[in-house]
Length: 260
Image (cartoon, rainbow, N blue to C red; front, top):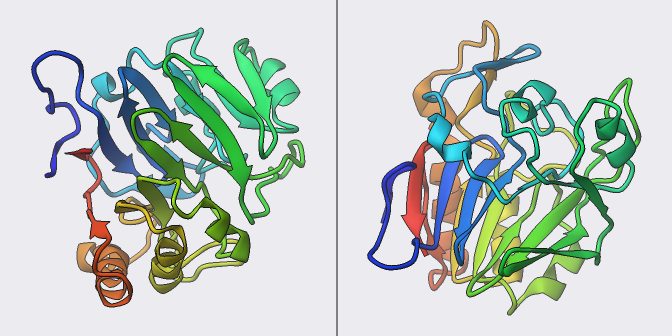
């Protein structure tokens, strides 16, 4: 089921759902807890412009925590973080905490792979990622993914290449949020394309796989059209249907959400 990011509810307690807001920004709502990943909330960052619709303010209100996977500008955007409530809790990789605190973010906690933090009724654990996520002119911090564990367990991979140790998560992940593309015509090292992301899903064996990091940003002046931006998601679904048809692939356009 896919709906607009602002409009899924059910009677009683809030619905468990995933809303893909574009690029690597995902709103995870589990057990009444609201997590936002790698917020990129404005229409332009550096030389990149947003091609998808703008994110509604309600999608990043009343957050319990923000999960930052690494420090690249399209994943840690200071202007976007300043759009959040001032005391929003930030969970970040080792090496990023003091740098953010010097920029007036007070509620910052570093997590190395294997470290955990309680967020409401959830346990958030940092896990390995294979990506050079340090920031030019900033700290050389690590890159991580995250597991959010509650009634469901959601794996947010951040940016990463395919690596064998992903298989250690098999059997523990209900929903995998997997990067399948980038913002340019070519992918550099430390990323997965649609076929590699499908192989990652086979290793992880989640109940649901949702592609992220696609269809949102292009360099200013890029001639890439809407159909080309959508192609990675189509290929991911096609590859995964061939490799593991039992996995429920849910392709969400930026702004869409799905119940878990």
